[in-house]
Amino acid sequence: MVLSLFASLVSSQSSSDSQTMEKLKASLKIPSSFDWSDSDPCKWAHVTYDNQRVTMIQIPSQKFGGTLAFDVKELSKLKIFEVMNNQIGGPIPSFVGVS
Image 1 (cartoon, rainbow, N blue to C red):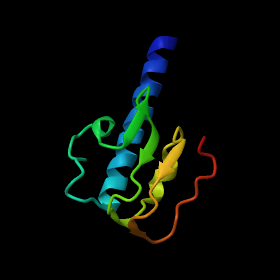
Image 2 (cartoon, helix red, strand yellow; image 1 turned 90 degrees about the horizontal axis):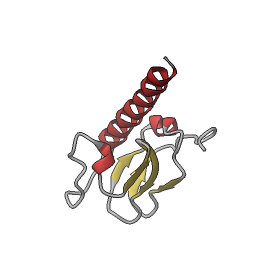
Image 3 (cartoon, helix red, strand yellow; image 1 turned 30 degrees about the vertical axis):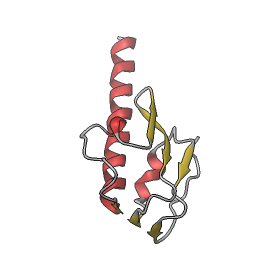
Image 4 (spheres, one colour; image 1 turned 180 degrees about the vertical axis):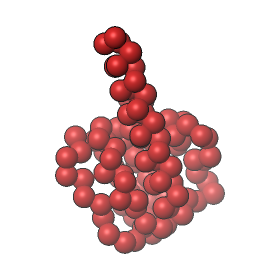
């Protein structure tokens, strides 16, 4: 019983991270040099996962545009979020509560 509850929780968390990453992808203008086309964000360039949870997004100086999805704050295991020197505008999401 405990194992199935744990498996369900992990599946829910990784699904949530995948959904959040898809929202981030939709909010950004991604340069053609980046391959974020795989249905599994774990395989996206410059995105690091640990145990199916996003821990790093490092896209500084990569010619990204658009805005940041406010849902990015839902990536509760995110430790490093580097987006400087791009053409990203709009408000910055709050990261209060993110590890």
